[in-house]
Length: 248
Ligand code: UGY
Ligand code: MN
Image (cartoon, rainbow, N blue to C red):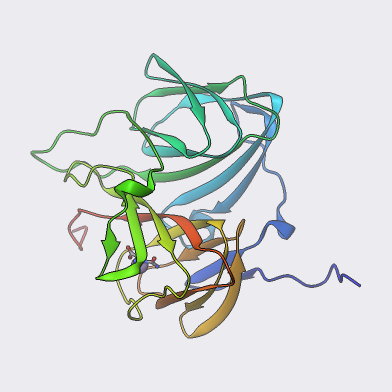
C-alpha cells in the first residue's frame, strides 16, 4: 500500500531533494495555461531559481527578463519560442538562454510540454559585454570525457566566456560511473534528473534519486554521486561561474 505520508523529498539548510510527489502549483504572472512548480528559490536560502513548467495545449509563457537572466530547456514535448524578436521551433533537448532585458514568448506547445528554467541575477563584469541570446541543443557528441573517466561525460550548454556568470551542463554517468571525489566548492547547483537512477551524497547524507527529481546544493554542500541500475544516469545542472569570490 502506498502511504501518502512518505516522500523522498528533504529540505535542509544547505541542500534539498525535491521529488515530484510534493509539487504544488504556483501562479506566475504571464505564464498561463500551465502548472508551474518553483523547485528552488531564495526562500530556501538559494541564490538561483529553478522551475518546472508543464503546459496544456493552450499554454503560453511570456514576459521580459529584468535583473535575472533565464535559461529555458525543453524536457518534454515542444513549442514555438520567440526571444528578442527571433522565432524558432523548440523540441526535446533544445534550449534558449535569455539574457537580462529581453522579451520571451513560448507558445503553441504540444499538450504536456515541460520547460525547465534556471534564473540567476546577472552580475555584470567590467570590460566584458553582457551575453546575447543563445540557442542550442543537447548533443552527446559534444560531451567530452570528464576527469579521465570514460564513464563520465559533460556537455557545457553555454559558452565558457567571462561575460557569462552562469553555466548549465548535462552530466551523463554511464554504468558504473561515479564522481571521482567528494566535491567541496563555493559554487552552487540546481539540477534536474533527466534519465536513470543514482545515489547522491549531500553533506554526508545518502539519497536514492531518479528521473524527475531535483536537487539544490548550496555553496560548500559536499557532493558525490554514483549511477545506479541498468541505464545511464543523466542530469542537467546549473552552476554560478566566472565572478570574484567576494562581493565587496
Ligand atoms: O561542475 C560540477 O561542480 C559538478 N561536477 N558537480 C556535480 O555534478 N555535483
Ligand atoms: Mn559540483
